Amino acid sequence: MSKSQGQIRSRLQEQRITRSLKEIGEDARRQMASGALWMAKSDVVSPLFQIECKTKEKPGKSMSVKKEWLDKIEDEAFEVGKTAALAISFGTQTDYFILRDRDFLAFVEELTELRKQVNGDV
Image 1 (cartoon, rainbow, N blue to C red):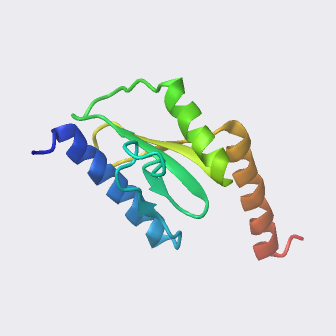
Image 2 (image 1 turned 180 degrees about the horizontal axis):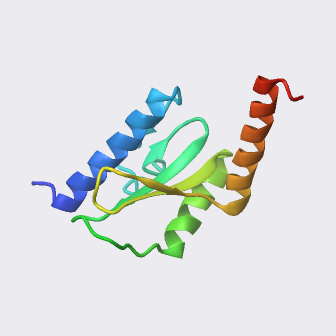
């Protein structure tokens, strides 16, 4: 059985995100059979994140984001104590990440604090 263009694009997106996270030291892996097995949740997982990946089959300028995708990944991340992220791609090599406001603000707060420590502003 051959894979559809959409399945191929999805796999490439998951591999790209996994590789990018590994390059910055995050122990990430693709979740095999994600969505098909009850214990294999999310598309990419790491110690910090549960990531659901969505991409367009053909390059485009817009994409609808479904609240059910966000609810699903948020529930899965909550179950394992991680941060939920939805990664979207418009069918290109660029991925955009959607986080809840409180998760984004927590990252900004932590980054700001780390920069103060590095710069000796503590």
